[in-house]
Image (spheres, rainbow, N blue to C red):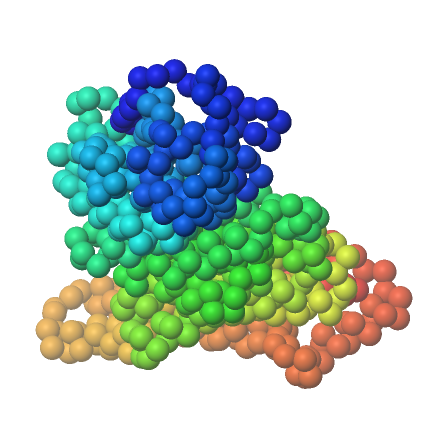
Length: 593
């Protein structure tokens, strides 16, 4: 930070009540009022340098004690006092912090070269050009100070020149950056031999007001020389600097937080940031977009802002992780922790956008890879959300059913989520359990999960029977694939006869008789084995009948078993299950469906 020192006399200004005056043997002959402060000064040091005071006092006529009111001076009494001390020759220190108000006040008082050579405006302009605009942090600080005098700063060109200086330095190659900057990212150690990071400028400009920040970002994007990822990083840093961290806010605290924070200002900052996000995919992370969407819900942002964030989140949902989705709900009516409604809306947007882009996806397309990755993450998210004791079952089901069948080649993760939900919500009634387990496709369960599901007492009987049926059907298909086809068996039976006829080897009578007897008996064991296998399959189909939807007809044997259980049978289904020879439906006798 650079400074400029003007004047050599000591500061002799002092205050008595609401009056500021200068310690001098000469009585004051000029009264200047600014807001609630009254200055008792002298005409001689001020009038030769201030063209405005010359005109005002000339219009009022000669008087021994003139009075002037300057309530509209930019910068107020502090800026006027800097100009007055310059006129008296009192030492003043100028820097980027007080330059803008001093320059605007000097222009207001017309302290120009036309009034007196070497006047205040000339010295301030020289300091601005040679020191402030040449420095990085000086330019940023000076630009920040223009926020208190926006109109004056724009009319005098201070704002535009500071922005141009900042943009020019941002466009400088990192290897040529030789000025001081603020960079406090984790893992970065400021050493001389370490190269300057590409986003070295993002933290310093995050101190600016949102309008000034927008001016810089707009100017950078207009040059087409800054990568969209760097623009996105600057937006991320600014949002972290000014927006509340909604991941640490819970619904009971929301009302108090909203009352204490400047909601309108934060809402405006959020909406401005969203409007500046580059259109390029990947310019910002999906984690950042989801956090902005959560903050928008918390602050009550406009529907346009929410819609845009939902669309952007849907475009990049295939990059999401489970931790990115664990965002709290901020509605006072919601007693559950995670904002599952927001995740459902984003997932719906993802499915709509990708169906438009891939109307007929193939198994090897980018869509299939993306949708299956999203399905995996959603199922893992459901496993975490299922642990919330207040999570409504229908919201859980709604999110699980939102994924298409192609998103889940296996239902193992979904089964884990359902099992966790049943464990954490033991008060579910039978209808709710059936509705929850209906989303499970038992044909897509691995053998290990099937073995666990059969012994899972939390599952409804209907689901367990389905698991048993499909597991047995899968085992039958595996056994059938190991058996040789019927055509091969026929050829194997005919081959020895044909070879005997063609070759006609001369064998002893005993060997020939043994060979013929072995040939006749060779194919006979295969036929009973296949018939026995077919009978086993028919028996399985008769004993196990699965009711996939309500209203399907049950097997007569299962209905009789249920009636026997109601009539007071004391058979223990657990013991029945232990015997492998027992029928499959006997295992569930007396158990709720």
